[in-house]
Image (cartoon, rainbow, N blue to C red; front, side, top):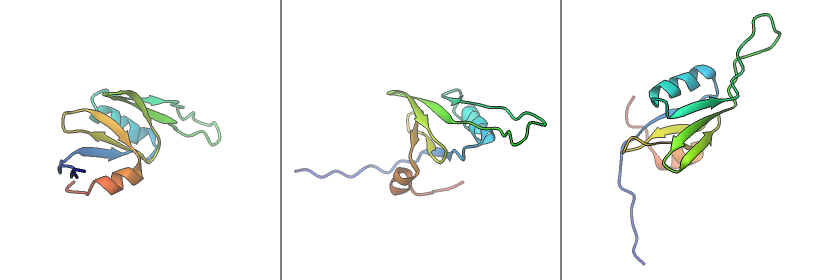
Length: 98
């Protein structure tokens, strides 16, 4: 059986920390390829209320996919976007530069 090796490619990625500010950064970076789900704005004087985003939807070549806090949002070699779980990302990619 033939054996293949994945070609080395460089991609851009941002790991979503679950915060609304990081979700906003990802939304701007992706040029509208992402959208937030379940945004609850902070209300002044309302106890423990915090900004919260439940998930980010990413427009991929296969349709919309949901990213959870901790997931990476990747911009692929052809400009496509997709979410990736941290364990898969760590097994697949090495940090090259900032």
